[in-house]
Amino acid sequence: MGSGSTTGRRRGAPGPTVDRDVPALIVKFGNYPLHHGGVGAIRSLGRLGIPMYAITEDRWTPAALSRHLRRPYVWPTTGTEEPGRLVEGLLRVGRLIGRPAVLVPTDEEAAVLIAEHQEELAPAFLFPRTEAELPRRLASKQGLHELCTEHGVATPEAAFPASYADVVAFAERARFPVVAKNREAFVRRHRPAVRGTTRIAGPRELLALAREWGDAPGVILQEYLPREEAEDWIVHAYFDAHSEPRALFTGVKVRSWPPHAGMTACAYVVDNPELAGLAAQFVKRIGFSGIVDLDLRFDRRDGQYKLLDFNPRMGAQFRLFESESGVDVVRAQHLDLTGRAVPEGEQRAGHRYLVENIDLPALLAYRRSGYTTPHAPARADSTELAWFAADDPVPAFAMLGRMVRPGVRHLYETYEARSKGRGGGA
Image (tube, rainbow, N blue to C red; front, side):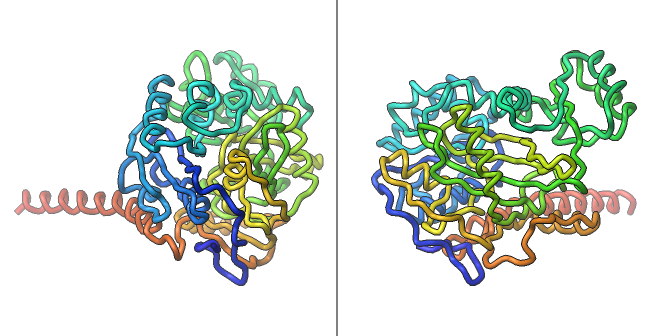
């Protein structure tokens, strides 16, 4: 069963032998229907004959329309619901599936909920068991910074102001530019202090922003690593109950959207044994089990890989990586949790991953800036598209429809307004 979305000379490996009696459920909370990672997980496991289910916002999300999905469970959520309500909803879905299913969370809210309610969810689902508080701590910028400091892992210098006065004191001593981020991952469902990673040029700009943060700023102020002196690397892996890597991959992020600070738009597989060793060692020390998606920046000024983000769940671009034995991190988890051996194999080289709907604007932005990634290969032997797959084309068309619809609505409303204006003046 080759990967239907791979183009070029090489195609995916046939894939390992899995337990087709054990289904899988894609779990996501919040309203973000254009999520290619969930579609990728449905295809990856579905192509092996595993019954696939997914929680979706409605019946017309791209994930809900995949031919590899047996059934979508329409359950609109915001991510701000009481945990008890979300646990009840998950158990209700589990009863509808009718047999224990492997859980595949695609966001921090789902990963944290599963970890913190393991005992209630265990009878209905299969998932890696880890320390209940650990995923929430890893998803927090402050919690991750503390863990890195505790275990000697390089990370950008950071401050965590508790008041406006703390921001003023920081502005007086800091070396600008600096970066502001929301301290907790979950704040995006409420009222974030900043929209995303925000570069701040100087003290005046910082203080102007801080006036809007209230008495308790929920931000981290972090050292800025100039892109001219840095490289963006990613690690995707699955760790078993003993925090041993059963599948571990490394690559470089070539483009992101928004530029230099957002979701991966284009990435390449690049072997990096040093980085793989650093990641495995850190995960072993903290005792995490499950799928991880790490973002690191190599700072050429001091020769260190600095950990920026630790996502305790599947990353949206996980299909960049597959071993020569046909294993990706989602397949590795299913194999391990169902008692099957995870076949060994080197990561397939020369592979590229593109997210069609965001890579074009990212490409234009990067070309204007003149920035290139030093370790990006000159060419790829094969390319996997996030949305389009020859054996499953409908999700790509659904994605396009959802992107075009707001623009069409805007054009129609503009036309109506102008028509009324002309009519009133006649």
